[in-house]
Image (cartoon, rainbow, N blue to C red; front, side, top):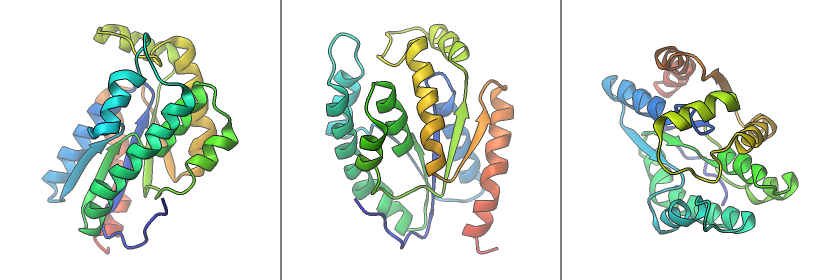
Amino acid sequence: MSSTDDRKGLFLVIEGGDGSGKDTQLRLLSSYLREMGYDVLETSEPTDGPIGRKIRQKGLSEKERYSPLEMQLMFSVDRNHHLKSEVYPALKDGKIVISGRYTVSTLAYSYALGLDVELLESANSGYMKPDLTIYIDVDPDTAIKRIENRGGAREIYETYDMQRKVREGYRIFLSRFNHIVIDGSMEPGSVYKKIVEAVYPYLQNLNGA
């Protein structure tokens, strides 16, 4: 899907491996922007749409899952729906869209499952790029400790080896996007401060300052 050039809003993406704290930071940033008077759409991938639910229910399971190529195709279908139904309309209306995961996440995680770099770049080349991708970086040891502390069933990516490969994938693909890297080993408040500092210049541009 080709990107559109008529966006009036701001498209931000928060990325990170499992245990990076990206969901917490997305909520904190959304609250901050709303308090400043901005109209914010909080969203994520996989989505809550029919394909996104299938990915969550089966695609991430250790016992029963799709092949890496099937997963890539499903992520593409889910993203097309996400962009058409939520992201594009919100940006045209001048809203700030903050998505937890987007294209670079699919690239990194599919790479960790063994798909070829050139294949992944070709399959994900046509999507609208965010104004800014915020990558919260944590090492595999920290990620696994945080995953263990929260308990619950493990997903296929929630092992040391997979987190190492995911991190490697992010390092390969992030250069294709306008991005910043933030040290996720810091306290959540310090991570949040760094994110706000990074986003502030984009708010000035949005306001025409």
